[in-house]
Length: 381
Ligand code: UD1
Ligand code: UDP
Image 1 (cartoon, rainbow, N blue to C red):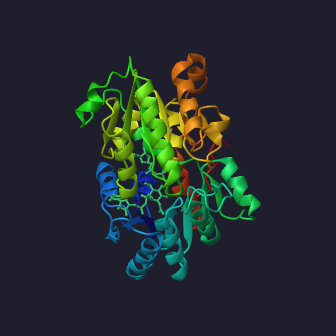
Image 2: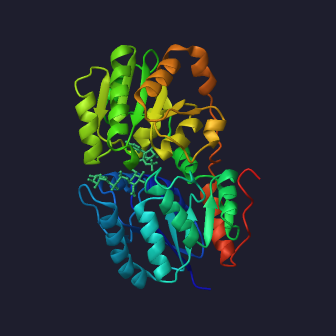
Image 3: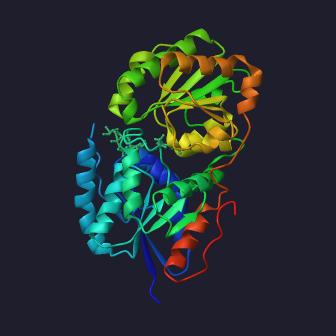
């Protein structure tokens, strides 16, 4: 029997972090030829993850440009993927999540009549414009994919509601697999500011913010709220690794430069980020990935968005939806900073998103689909 050719396609930082342990798992499997194609929708932020996980892509479309638009990302991915798929002839293409790379990768595979496996399938808000464009990206990929790897039971129920029930697997999220390899007890940061922060006696707030639907007024309000929190709480240090998007850089620096207890730093590599998260007091973010990682590390999270497609940690009590309005963000942060009972109620480790075995289940499920192994048991089942 010839090797099964499995091609993983990804392009941004979070896709890379969540696909890296799966690519590694597939490379270890007998009878599998694991291929890796990056679109490089992100460049520096992608390369940093490739370095940490020692991944060497077989194909690199190198599409990123400054202030790129949704149309240019999608069209450059589609054009680039044609040649790659013709040359590599994979038996299946794996895409992850809900970025423009995810959508274009799945669409391209469909154009070439190659089956698609969707990792992190079934997340939904049912609001077309929030998150934008991710909600539509993942729905369109759901319609294209043959195999759907759902992190949680609620994700699987979303697909069932859309009458997608064939080829659905409950696997957990691969981000928990990644997290288990990165957090260590005595970690030394490359940036000395982070080594010298007094994590035991001061309250370190870890911030990230980048979503397109937050561009404009919501982001202005978020940054003003952070400035207010820093100025009125001298016991706090805000550490904010700022996303390289020029829109975000401009807004963050305009509001937060020059405030003594705000540390605006370049994006961290994933090991640094996970270890900083493990040491911080609170997380304030609009990121998807951080909403999954912080609960596993027992850190309270305030989500600076109007909705979330990750309700599991909200139900578990470790995540609160703060919205994007100045007053509410300040109010919830002040409550966590000033009320030990409110803090204790949110600061417990929960793991609704995975048990570190998601990659094994996904690899098993693919092999089962091609008649080469047993069907894996569900996560949590
Ligand atoms: C993208 C995804 C979003 C995901 C996010 C993760 C889409 C439409 N959006 O949004 O779902 O949550 O990645 O971070 O797919 N840049 C650099 N270097 C880098 C990365 C980005 O300079 O390594 C700058 C470039 O100017 C680029 C801009 O950031 O044009 C925006 O990048 P883009 O991928 O379009 O959007 P994100 O906001 O990163
Ligand atoms: N991350 C990182 N360095 C940073 C900020 C985030 O390594 O400076 C990691 C984070 O731990 C998570 C992922 O990047 O695993 C989340 O990416 P992002 O917030 O860019 O995208 P989203 O998850 O919202 O799609």
